[in-house]
Length: 225
Image (cartoon, rainbow, N blue to C red; front, top):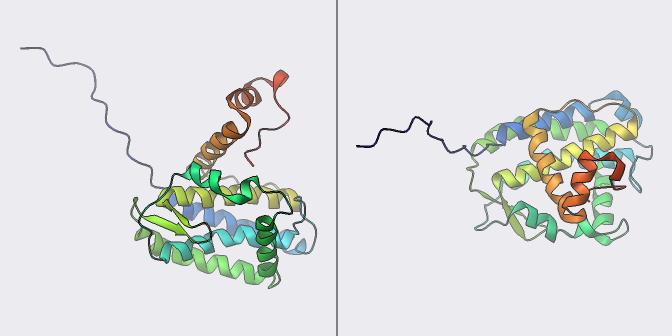
């Protein structure tokens, strides 16, 4: 009879549940939108071309609000992979003046016209309702993104929303002149992983590795978008 192996049994790694991380991301949004220097800069140009600070902040603040709306909608039947979502999305490859990107800015500017306090109140209200909405979402839930015509699984959907929060939070900080609050690893890690994959797809593995490890041959940019 063979002796039992002394090696420990490897247990499968459980899937990460990003629902708590998304609540932390919503808190990050509120912390930025609530700043008085953000309110004071509302009508100034931002660090991004064609964006004012108010429109940019409204776009940031819309992420938890939009997530709440879509999580409460009827689920889809099938979902695509997260990276495929970005491969298909017109705004990723579109230019500054392409219709899709003009539409995003226009919608955000319209929301900003209500003023900082209204924008803040909307995201605070959404944050209060998100725990109950998220509690009902199982991991296989296919969340329909109606303006694209396809759906993402729950945590892929939340990762995409968190990417918007992380990136645009830094955009707002750069525009107004402050350091964005430190993000929990549970928020930052999936976003960095997503941006890394997208950057490698856009610029190639060699460019990405060089940018992260070899300053003497680092490319000018490895931006994912």
